[in-house]
Length: 362
Ligand SMILES: O=C(O)CCC(=O)C(=O)O
Ligand SMILES: [Fe+2]
Image 1 (tube, rainbow, N blue to C red):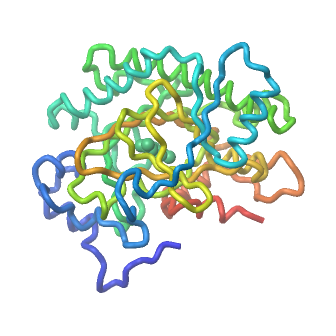
Image 2: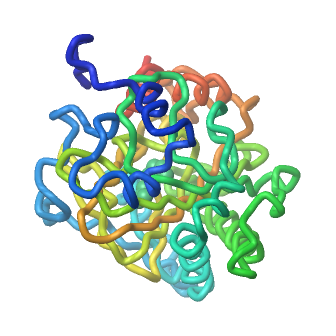
């Protein structure tokens, strides 16, 4: 459980800090570039119990996250068994031979790094998201809006709304490099296909029909978030992204060659080695609910490092806010969840590990 500092020892709130530095939107990139060379500002300092105890890799166990080969001629029973094991024991796994063209993985990583590294800040700010509404599209840094006391993540991001097609408006995305919008659209379509394939495997691995989860999800809502973690002068005090599980059904994530993503396994943090051609599948909270807890959503976080910036691309697959998700097996271990309420609660309270999901346990 997170221990909040007593009021007297509280760090300056984000709002005060914001005023101190001129009222402009606060992006970690601008802080990392000019204001801070040797110390991070107080709003980014994690309480001691949340700090990474040692730096990159050193505190990770030698567990390795499972890798599942999705090659076409694979025996279907073997494939389901591998999926079952990975979902039951990890809630996250790499897939290879996934059918997504490999050059596309590099193209979206390159498009992202070009936005964060090649464009001047004034240009990037033309795409600033609305920092007063959660999950708004565009360039931003702050994930949560409700609490001024939340410790801030050492991360900036660009969020794209990609499905349903009615939400997709490429003119709101950068157009440099010149293929940026095209790459994001193509990547979005490919991720949707892969997510549906994997949700089918997850369903059949539990004896459900292959369209069971897809049908329960209803209209698919997909967001693509490119996260950029600038090098951080004090990685031992900060997190790139605090510990959380993803809210929806399934997240497909790729990273660059800088390690930083850690998944929780049996109470320990395990660093996910970057594998450039692999895609990481992360089970979200709705998958835990619909499988009645047979499969657990994966708790994960990102750490920072002092030497290099890091980039990841996460593609989230969620139900509509009007959808209710109910466990597929009885007796139910979770209350049915009205997804819109779940999202509001997540953004109001913050993730803090898996507390929002724990609140639904019967
Ligand atoms: O950057 C990463 O590797 C993790 C990103 C993530 O967990 C998220 O955006 O939900
Ligand atoms: Fe996540």
